[in-house]
Image 1 (cartoon, rainbow, N blue to C red):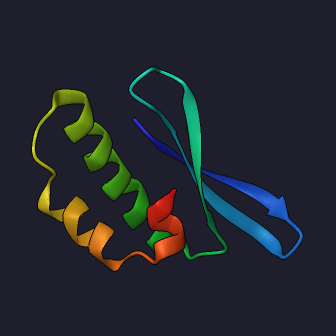
Image 2: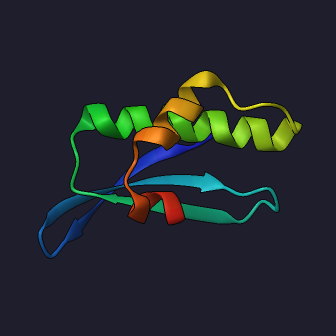
Length: 77
């Protein structure tokens, strides 16, 4: 399960997705400044990716669409 976190950055309140990787280590995907709607979409997509990885199954179509739409900087993370 992943969650949305917020932190005060030098440019305002930034958003991040907090999750645990396959080894159980807590990780964060920093989204930067974004709307709550976009943060919830990213959270949902990350949960689909995590579940697919956990169960060694195909990606959910929503997760695939999200990966196609994100910019290269976030995609590399």
